[in-house]
Amino acid sequence: MHNKEIPTFASVFEQEVYEGLTAYPKYLSSKYFYDEIGDKLFQDIMAMPEYYLTNCEFDIFEEHKKKIVQHFINDGSPFSLFELGAGDGKKTKVLLKQLVDSKADFDYRPIDISHNVLKQLEDAIKKEIPEVTINTLQGTYFETLRDIGSANGKRKVILFLGSNIGNLLHPMAIEFLQNMRDSINEGDLIFMGFDQKKHPQVILDAYNDKTGITEAFNKNVLTRINKEMGGNFNTDNFLHWEVYDPESGTAKSYLVSKEAQEVNIESLELNIRLKRWETIHTEISQKYDDEVVEWLAEKAGLTVVTSFSDAEDNYKNYVFKK
Ligand code: AVI
Image (cartoon, rainbow, N blue to C red; front, side, top):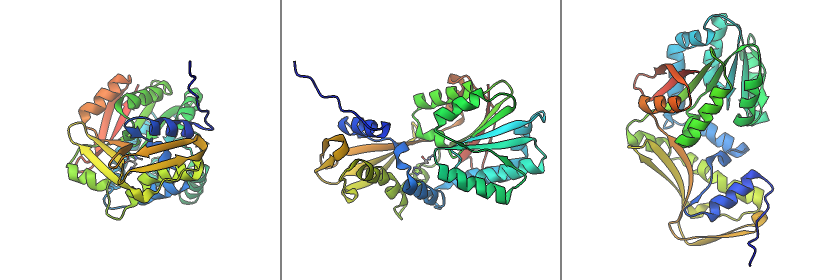
């Protein structure tokens, strides 16, 4: 019998690239967009006028900050405010300032995979809102949720903003919400952003800007494979393509091969062929409505307490409890 060789991988990234590029149809996970360059590109995306999500969430916080923090403060007992994937904290600062003004007894515990991001955030908070006690936590969502779960004593409020949940398909989103649920107790809260269904063109424009920032962001996964695994992708040979299905609310990003091509990835000892117009699916950005959010929450054993939205209901932040 012929034994098929099982490749060994130096990292989960390598393994997932191998699996995704040898599958049909091909795929790569959007979690690999983010290295130093990808982080910067995402910052640029958040500053684009087409990428309405950031401004909507900022406006919701500005408009409803008093009511929002009232939910966090609850009975006035001390609490820790955790934030998963904290980023630059621009929006969170609105809530932190309001918490200080409301004399809340809390500490802020931002969590991010990047040391660099956390250091910058810590410096900014210490400078701009010195009243806030900040303790950063470095790690993946999964590891840190475990840490949150075992942190005893204070009440917990967990922030998960920016519709980051939208990068997970529903089954994964439910699993993620279940993990969040397992890390909190009765009386704790989860506060999350969910981008809403809207005019399909607005969504397509947000994920397909004319300046090409989103295209560069999408292609950064290929650039990373080139750098980190000795790949020889020519990113010019791919189109960035965005589709949005208004029925399911799913926006999907693809890299489409403009010509028949062969790519070699040295450290995977892998040669792949792409036909002309063959696709690599890279990202989903799910859009929601109240029914879907309630369904996800129920599946995960959470209850929707209330929600806050912008004037046009383009975006909503939901408060969940156990
Ligand atoms: C991080 N995440 C919520 C963004 C989104 O909207 O799906 C990532 C992104 N992809 C393209 N533009 C922004």
